[in-house]
Length: 299
Figure: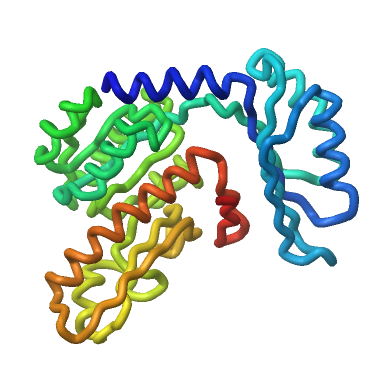
């Protein structure tokens, strides 16, 4: 915990004047010129800029800009008020966020520890700059590990009969902690439509398959029976459609006929934890824009 706090303080000091602007709107001439001129007029210096258009002729335009501006934390609301006129002119969906805003993260986990541990280690090392506010589990297995990092651990058992009651307890906790993002680190429960609707575009899952192949339970067994030559993992936002939400990140590893189910699981665990960390990191850094059932990821 001490080392993580050192990383946070160093980060806060270095980036106290930095902010991020994310935009999506109908593509048309003049968007970049208007936005950059506006930022210049606010005394801003652009340090990173990424853009993409689905089609310059009538498509959707996406823009992510990082910039430094003196005393941005005190001026944020005033800048937002001024920018609103431009946003209306170009029919923008947009958000301005402070680089130093530490998103509050809740981790859900069941019995498997590899994704949880990777998240905790990366967080402790300062690679995931966020407030890991709490861990919720339907088992007691991970309590000692989590509490050793100074993070509160909540055991909420889930059965078919108590699922609704358990989710209400979870939702109450998440609201009390004012959570920004929920990470399902191999949480082996299907969330209800009510739960998903309560936290739209805020739930990140890791699925132990290279989606859209092998949706649902026991994907490694499905992959073994199919005789695949590649296995992978997918991190995506959760929607009501099981394992079909917007994909943030994927990766694969080559396998062959010599690999049995347990081999696939062992290799898969390595892929799962790295894919989940990447997806969360990009989300924390405001590098992901959801468009329909896809994502634009400015790495």
